[in-house]
Image (spheres, rainbow, N blue to C red):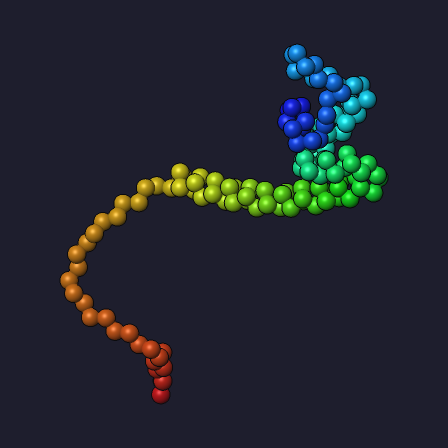
Length: 126
């Protein structure tokens, strides 16, 4: 993870050993690591994390957190809809499990005449 963050420019090791390629980080960088970890737990995309690391103002973090909150609200609505659909399907499946199997039989009947009346007939009584 640290190498990926280094690759995308999010962090930079304090020192890299040229022989072993081992990366060393300064204790002052741990605040950045904790901030990155915290924002990622909140679901913050890495580009937004990078923006915050470059502008650590209170206004910046408030805006980012409000945007993330809105995104989470949208996801909650979407997931609630999906959950409702799953619940409906489960109710249907339970109903099918409880019902008796239907046997369909084909029965041949003699031809019949069918009449269709468009208007309702009124019977008058005298």
